[in-house]
Length: 270
Length: 67
Length: 197
Image 1 (spheres, each protein chain N blue to C red):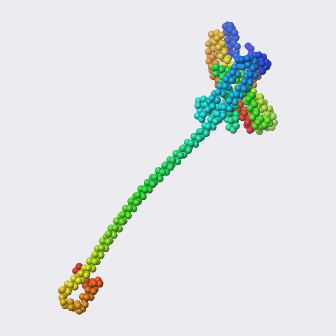
Image 2 (cartoon, chains in turn green, yellow, brown):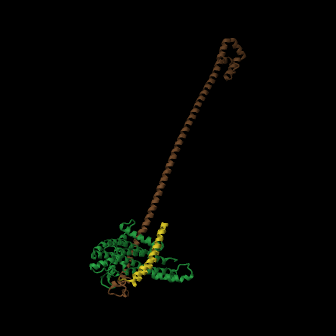
């Protein structure tokens, strides 16, 4: 869509004589606040810390005096907690052992949801997860946890044995073992981190394209482009709503997959 | 016109998973329409399948970034 | 951007913006770890135990409430049954008493009637007996009187001759002796008074 709109831009820009439109790219996501380089204190770091502080405060404040008849705040927290506890943890892991993993999945879902939604909430407007460091951190924790509990439960040999479904013909077992090992050690963490990262990055970049493009057309374009910028802003608004939905879904999927990986490591038979 | 040929590669790599995800959710909708009470179980399976199919598109994205 | 992938992003690059977006900035990675750890600790230490406790309490409260309600219902049911049983008992008691009273009344009535009957019979009987006795007495005394009067009369009518003859023959003595002993033969003397009375 941006290409079709930018095509007349070139024509009109040539007559208007302004400088060319610089489309947003991954470089726009590096926003250091203090310092520079890889140790700089960046905007997503600030957002991450804000989210941790705000969430901790909210959850502790609403559950410190958890009552049998919940107040408004406790009710909201409980609704969210129920989604994680019953909808994700219990359904995926099973009612026997799920309680041990509820705190982890709950904090994972909460922090992902809030940081994703920072992408569309006005004062923040930056999806923290679109910086790869954060999803890698979370994925590394999930990775260590599910391998640890798998090896602890089955033993190292039994854990690799559990990759292969029982009842396969003997000649196919080595191939499946290689594929599943690759899946357990490479595909799973890679896709887990990259899925949420890619969605956040691409989604936010799409919004940036619409908004900066519309702004550019409105400010620097000719009369025709000024008219076109109106549906562009409208589309940006629609895409923002769509993006909010994607952000919630991606946080849910990340948590669900983490629970599912834990469940497969815990399962008696693969 | 400037750009990166890897973008085209990523675009191509997204076609297959796109179709696959569409098939997965079509089957999910069919299943729920036939047996609404199995929704919870089907939803988890559908999202897992969706994650597996999407893994291919994510590989494309990674390859685009490291190209 | 295609040329920049070769730049080692993990090294302190002067321009992080041009680093590949899939290579993490160390600062962000570490901050991600540390603050997620803090959040996880807070959730595990404070939030989840409180919520689980509230859940357990709620389950207990609901179960306790249900138990209590059940108990109350059972109590009410028992009370109702008891009340109904008492009511039925009272009713049957009343019916029994009424029946008894009726029976008693009937009994008394029959008894009284029988008593009255016997009394009447007795009175009639005694009256009859008295009458009979009086009649007998009257007959006896009448007989004696009649014998005496008839002998008197006969002696007056017959006179001396009869006196003498009677003395001679001892008829009057015998007759009187018989009369005194009360053994009067109706054929001998009573033929006349019998015809008289």
